[in-house]
Amino acid sequence: MNRWAGLLLGIALFIGGALARADERPVDGIDSALQAEMDRLFALRTVDPQAFVAQTRSLDTMPPPANLGQREFLQFLQANRAAFEGRLAEAAERAKPLADAAGDPRLRLRAGAFVINMLAGTRDFEEGLRRLTLLLRAHPMPDPALLDEQRVLWATAAVLYNELGQHAMSVEYADRALSAGPTPREACGMKTYKTMARLSLRDASLAEADFDAADAVCRAARETVFGQGFLSLSLARFLRDRGRSDEALRLLEDRIGQIESTRYPRLVAEAYALDAELLLAAGRIPEAERQAQQAIETSKDTPTSLPVAMAEKVLFEIHRQRGDSSAALRHLHRHVAANRALAEESLTKERAFRTVQHESLQREQQLALATERNRVLDLEATIAKAESRNAAALSAALLLTVAGLVFWGWRLWADAQRFRELAQTDPLTGLATRQHFAELAAAALERGRADGRPLALVAFDLDQFKAVNDRHGHRAGDAVLRTISAAVRAVPAPWPCIIGRIGGEEFAVLLDGATEAQAATYAEALRRAIASAEEVVEGGRAVTVTASFGLSGTHEAGHDLQSLLDLSDRALYRAKNGGRDRVAAVDAA
Image (cartoon, rainbow, N blue to C red; front, side, top):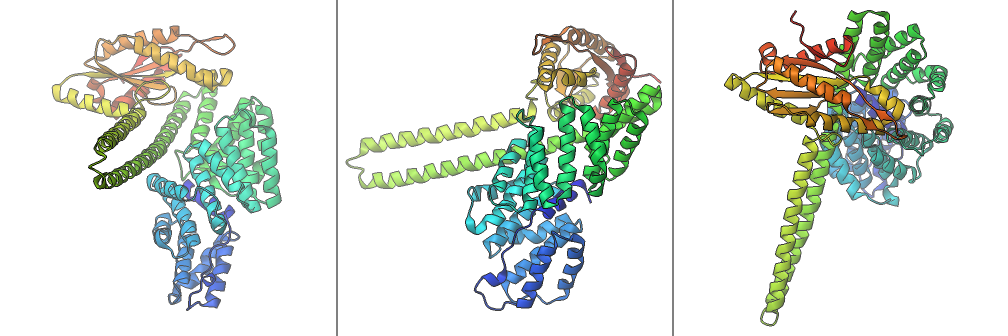
């Protein structure tokens, strides 16, 4: 089962609530014994999921209930069983008819939230977000008749938006769920997700007391996955980010056993990886190495996850300190691969969110246009009755209507342009995003292949940039990135070039028509420009950074972007290992 599936089962465990019963509706043909058994099984799923899975199989051999409400309830139980067994796509398909057309509005809303979770688990973020947007628009305010189901919907929104990196929206919907009379377990889960989202937002008002308050709620509910698990891990990160690494290490060492007892692989792996980072910083190398290896082993089903990226970085630093360059390079490659996969996953989630957001905006605008057109039709009908005495008014109304339609058309065009720019331009540096850089570079390489023209790729990475963030804060780090980007754009290139930001502090330039020797001259100019760039941060301190460069050309890699990136990366590692702040080409060997 993938890490998303585990997250979804976690949601199922802390979101309970009563579900609509068929016998609450005045319909004939109810089987009272069957209803009692289905109610018992539905409650069992949040207490003992394994027993729920085993015991719901007995319902498969029964003939379909005569009552429609009972048939729908049985179908929802079967969808839940499929989810607990890891068959998320099947679970979604079973629940979609209920989400779209169940007779009982409570079951319809509960099934809708369930389908959203299943779609997210199968990484179909766009359809999940579309359904979530429609349900949230349909339930903007609490409804006493649907409050339990609305609370499930808002909790689902809080979890999904947090996972997609939309932390402010996660806080908003966690607050909605907390204000709707949650059970103790639900309150624990929502307070934990709200605290995690505020931590991700770097909320300056977040304090240790907030963690203690959430922990007290979870202890009262006897909830371990969130209280002893996610909350403890988030508090350790909070302490580390505020320079209290020793306290963070003591906290993890005190609670690592409790975290392990949750038997939740994603959570345990992240705890091992963070523990490894803190142990390395404390100089406890053997323990750091053991915890890093534990994180990787626990994450064996998700080799490109965050714990793997963190653990591989720790192992790289350990082997580098030992002078084992071969092992250090191997772990560095794995760290870079995991980081790239994480970046691609974040891009996929961001693209899904922006796409659905754009679609939602278009729907609102189309609705406004339709309303405007209806208003026009009403006006025309009224005007037709009094045309003889209202000719002037008719002209004015038509003129205003046309102006309104033109205005909405212009708004649609402007929004489309704005979303295109968001997808193509990195908002921090103004350079091409990784996806847009890849599209432009692939087209240039294809033209170069057809014309027999050489191209060169310059990849560079800012040296020890994490130290800038650690010492001066992420706001200062962002300012340095903007300064470096401006310095790079200011260096004249004798050839057409494409510049992109392809990672956090990693950049690439494709030079159209340049040989590798010419690219080396240009890269040296970039290196000097970056080294001389200066950013004055808060406190009046001037911050400078250097960069390491790797070069490759089409005479070595052919006109293939991935091959050029791989060779340039290899050369960049040579520059890093050679002392940083230098330009290196691909080793001829």
